Image 1 (cartoon, rainbow, N blue to C red):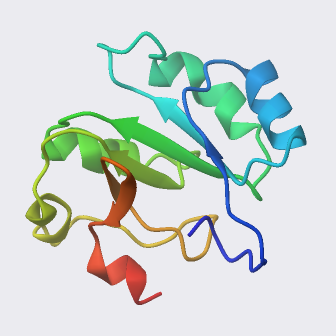
Image 2 (image 1 turned 135 degrees about the vertical axis):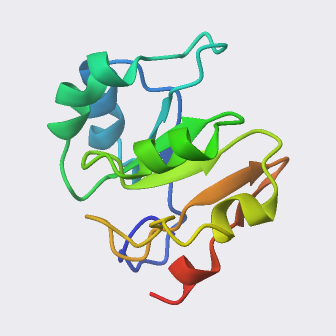
Length: 135
């Protein structure tokens, strides 16, 4: 799920990272992925422009996930195209079609092969982009 790592252990994503020190600590503790909350209504919110430099400095071996809540299609596409973001986690009322319909939606893996754009659902992570499953 978080790249091309194959192991017999559960993959771990730490969400709500707000600064470089916490990101590095999570990586040191074995995190496979880090989540960054770009939803202004969250107490863990960080601004993309403020965080871009330190997120971009993180190792390529760690999947960097942008957490969005009810984004517009344009916003989701814009964030997905950022070079320092490997995946999106949609955490609102988006429909499955939201990520599948537009032809311009690029959900191909970036620096983390095999990573898919996902939608969070209570108790599980549900893949919302069929094309990513085929990579």
